[in-house]
Image (tube, rainbow, N blue to C red):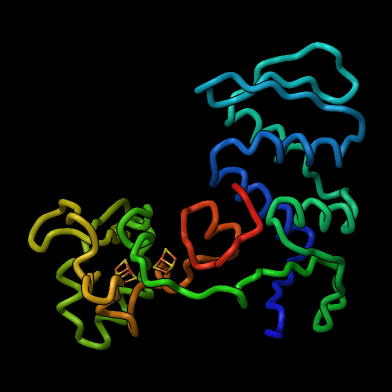
Length: 238
Ligand code: SF4
Ligand code: SF4
């Protein structure tokens, strides 16, 4: 059996990761209810309205229901995640949010207590469907380190598709992929090649692709929530 891949987060890092998760995806209303119940105890009732981005919520200890839109729900949850929560409670919240096993662990290097989270990545196999390359919003995620590597390797074939923008204090930012000689985004990634006869898509710059591409997906949940089929028979629903 493959060894489980785990990630150690301090309590603060775990709380930040939970907030990031809620900000990243559409309102996760049932998950929101589970977590609020874990933190405050008591019953919480949520009623959705069709095609609306939010829900009627009755919070623990309150009988009235009030409308919370998705953004308000996220902020309410993040405000409730204060640093006084015990590490074991934070681990329970992580298990629900990241849909995996999470437990309290002590970092052997620092002696600090934190949360060990199973990423589930040992079960991942890229199906080379190219879905992530075609549909995800990675255009603003290229970083200076990626560009520096391409410059060092003299990869002008890649650099010509990188948009360079100069902001305040001459700080540069980058975009991928822009049509050479313009600041317009290209239609899709120029390095994605479809091999129809084999029903797969390949990356033509696999060895030097941007970090954002290398890091995808970062977890089983990330894959499931963004439509990646790399986890066969995934147990989880978004
Ligand atoms: S969506 Fe998932 S399986 Fe498909 S190419 Fe991207 S990483 Fe691979
Ligand atoms: S660089 Fe490679 S991995 Fe990244 S979007 Fe293009 S084809 Fe996909």
